[in-house]
Image 1: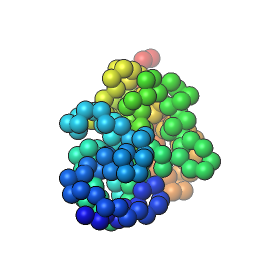
Image 2 (image 1 turned 120 degrees about the vertical axis):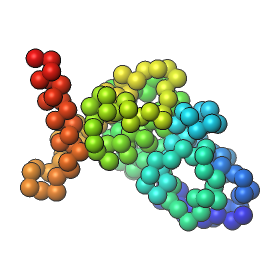
Image 3 (image 1 turned 180 degrees about the vertical axis):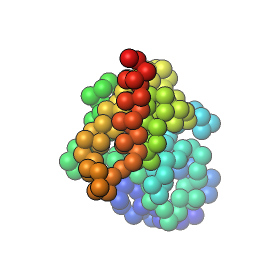
Image 4 (image 1 turned 45 degrees about the vertical axis):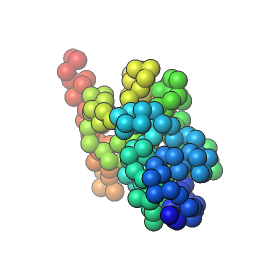
Length: 182
């Protein structure tokens, strides 16, 4: 079957077997090896990419299901200016560890912060439930995401502007944690 998928901003027409998984299409047909295959059972999240802006496990989707869609992989997350700020946060806060889950974690984390909501340590851990770290080093991953969220918050518009409520939630969570400790 012929599929037309925009991957990392480039539209590609490719002939694929109907049973080709999106992750295999990305890795084998397009040589985008940043998306990893961790478990083949959709449990680990190492294969997470954005499909039309939503994080999906690319081992659970056929390439033909992505026909006409836009896919962003870890390779497409960064721009010409270097690393995406979430990638930089993972590097700076030592969230990379062995690196196998990193691409999926980062793709999930970017959407997690964009969506807002509870960005406390507990909230981040709960929302990363579908992404597993084999090193079990979640502390630095959570720290990396919080670091990125703070960076976003520091650049957020002031009250009255187009504020991003989810970033205020992070501050509220930090204030609540500080009150509980005192």
